[in-house]
Length: 194
Image (tube, rainbow, N blue to C red; front, side, top):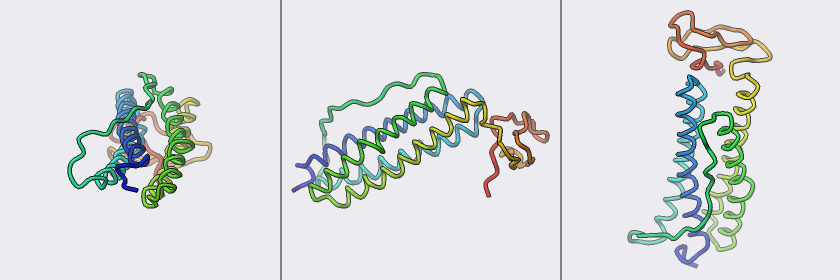
C-alpha cells in the first residue's frame, strides 16, 4: 500500500496538526506564566513546546515521503481542544489532560493502524511519541499540583535554590522571595539539578 492511499497518511496529517496546535497552546501557557512572573515555570513549559515542534517536524518528514512532488492539500476533518483561557492553573491541568489523550488513546491507535498497514517505521514513531506524551502529561500534572498547592518554591526537605540571573545559591526548604545579590524575584528561581 502506498502511504498516500492509507489511513496512516490521514493520521499523520491529524497528528501534525495536533502537535502544531499543542505547541501554540503551550506557548500561550508559557506566555501567561512569564507575564505573571513565573519565569522558571515558563522555561519548563517552553521546553515542552519546543518538543512538540520537534514531534511535528518528525511527523511532517513522513508526510513529505508520500509524494515526490508537493502536497497541495490533505483534507483533515477532526476535533482539537480549545479549552485554554488565561487561567494558569486550569491551563496546566488542560495540558495534562490533552497530553493524556494523545498518550492513552490517539497515538496508540495511530501506531496500531500504521503497523497493520505495513508502515513499521511510522508505527515506531507513534509508539515513541506515546512514551514522550506520557512524560509531558506527568510533568504538566506535577506542575499543576505544585502550583495549586502553592509549592512551586517549597520543598519538604532542604534543596539548593539557584538564581539563574546571577548564580546565587541557598539551601533551604523554600526559595528566597528576592535574590539577595541581584534582587531577582522568586519566579526566576530554580532547584539546582545535580
